[in-house]
Length: 203
Length: 193
Image (tube, rainbow over all chains, first blue to last red; front, side, top):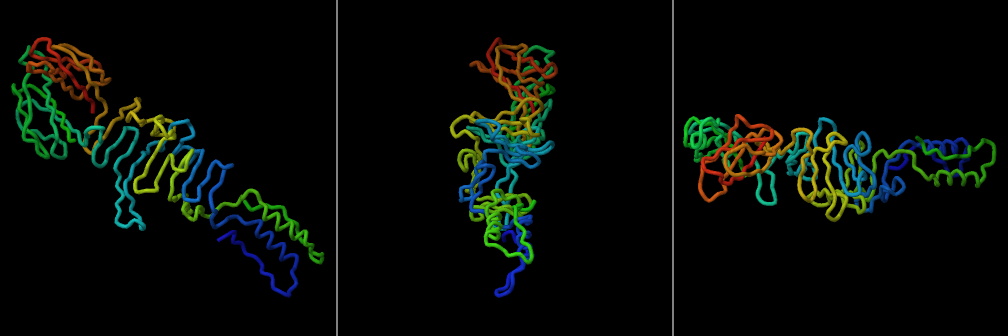
């Protein structure tokens, strides 16, 4: 710990030579690194400080390549900016698998990239209700269809989208679903042959 | 970069004065700026540490006005906060630096237009959603901005009627709603995946 340079030790009752004194001073003065700690942080004219309890306060920004390319809260009086590099994503991990936290499993639960917000575990919870899966299929006759929802849906919304060449009720029909399973559901429409589209949702 | 204090060099066969010795120690002792780097860093009784690889470990919070008004990792739940402690403030998720993809305020989540951005679930996604309404068959503006993947019209009148839409003529602005009743009211939901 410390500056940790190599120093000449002076021996009692032995003449102290000027060159040894000079060498020690020079060695200390030429130190290139310090191993150790400080009681608290105080840097950048007090703009980065710690409170002695492991909390850091900084008026600037955090970056990897340049300041503020990761986190920036000094660009605005109210806003916080969280950033990733080109082609990257901002990921949200719950839990940490470390030696100090044995048994914990770090789980990537969500991420943000240029295509939006990815819910990678569970669902998206609104103030009321939630959505966790969404899929879509089409058809044109009564029957069982694979819905692609990867689970038992909470709701299927079949809707006729016929060509509109005939007048009502030829191109308007009653339609519904039954028997949803993890892979398929049965669609019943009033006029077989009329096309429909179906949105499948899991809450 | 070394410490760089100005030191007096002692000369052999020349008396070493106490003043000169003191001056050298004082020069080293009064360095106002530590120009040598920390090999690794520790502070606050090692509650803040670096590992020598550019990683920082700290047990407390990170703040601007207070010590944990931005990030608070002191508990098992990590809190990420905007600067304002009251109601204002926006989280900006930017990819790359300078380009908003998503913002979050106390009013909710907003995807920034510019490319197709939405919520991606473990299965499927939703990018566009728009409610609209009307009465009777006809062309209606769905306000989705793109050609919908599906439109869900539901009648709102007290009489049950068949209702649907015409997919083949849908545009980025309009959809043809068909119902077999008269000019009865409906609500519609246009969705884009």
